[in-house]
Amino acid sequence: MTATAPAKHNPHQPRTIAITGGKGGVGKTSLALNLALTLARQDNRVLLLDGDTDLANVSIMVGLYPQKTLANVMAGECRLEDVILETDYGLHIVPGASGVQECMDMGQVEGLRILRALYNLESRYDYVITDTAAGLQAVGLHMIAATELACMVVTPDPASLTDAFSLIKVLRRRGYNRVPSILVNMAQGASQARSVFQRLDAAAQRHLGLALHYMGGIWRDETLRQSVLNQKPVALLPVSDPSCRQFHTLADMLNVRLSQLPRRKAGIAAYWHRVSRREGVVASPPGASSPESAAAEEAPAPDIKKQCFDAVGELEAVFSHGAVDPLLRYEAFTRLFALLGSKLDSDAIEIIQTGLAALPWENLSPERKRHLASHLRELADQVAPAARQPTPPEPGHPVLREPFYDRVSFGEQDRLVRVLKEQPADISLDQLLRSLSGNDQGGS
Image (tube, rainbow, N blue to C red; front, side, top):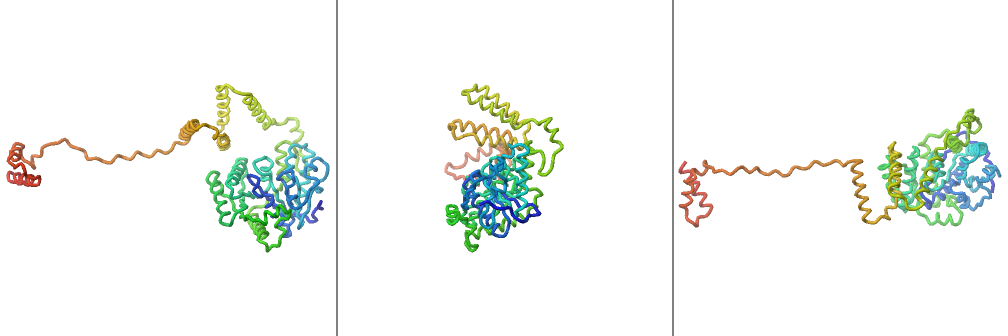
């Protein structure tokens, strides 16, 4: 059903949280809904933006099937208030919130109208929670950047950790400087949840120099799984129920984390407005006009993004026609890498690393794999030569002197020869040495 606007207004900006993840199937929509219901159950005014897809997954989980979404608002068919759905404990849901990205493609008047409506709406709530699109799409990244806290959902599945790390890496590369919070879903217990977080945190510290924040864990629960099928979230169960109680614990952890963060002066609509201005769509903030708009229309900035993608498209068209002369391909891509290396900063290095990881190395024959690995090792030695260990000195050997006759010990040589001839043939070595020693002493 359609909700009426909340009666009270929050004089401050709401706390804004993005429930996100690197891949689908980690349960973030269920977590976002149960967390929002729990906060609403605690007498907070909560708005849940369903930005996952345009299919309104959040509302379906509570048995509501919206007739209109944000797309209808953008088409001018209704007001933003008309698409709001109200469910238990007064929780309000905006289906199809991912459509706010389309403000970028709208005209200035229409885009400004949507953003102003969202600006007026969000100021009425204590919490605005966004269930973002999964993956690395632009709309999902913008939804994360628009909030003050990103809560990333992962599972013990190694692929989930890999995708979450990729998401964090892309956010960092795009200038996102806040520390994400990690929520481990489908864990067998506290020990496994902490272990999963530590693996991701260690990778982030080692490769990105970033220490992550641990939000907690949600245990693998058959009741939670059935609640999705039955369209009855566990947050509606008695608080004494273990499945419900863990979301109250999560709400407490969330508030502790938010208390450590400064309140942002601007909300989600203000962020989207800034993005729209950067893209040249909306020329003025809600309620204000821009005197520079006329000058901007007279001298429009070149669309660098379009030019770049057009150039890539042309290159793709050339190389998709079939066999291309290897020398031509060599020269083309050598020039591209030279262009990339003209400013060899951290972004360029990241592009090279991502490009190498995207190539299907598994398709190479074993011989070519060995050849490539040898070349990459040689290249690595050129980039960062390994510190050479000093060659340990060989074990010392006594210096052999030129042999000489010791006259001091054995006397003159002819005398020694005479003494040796006088000894019996069966004399032992010990007796011979005593005999020589005696003769030497006697003659000295």
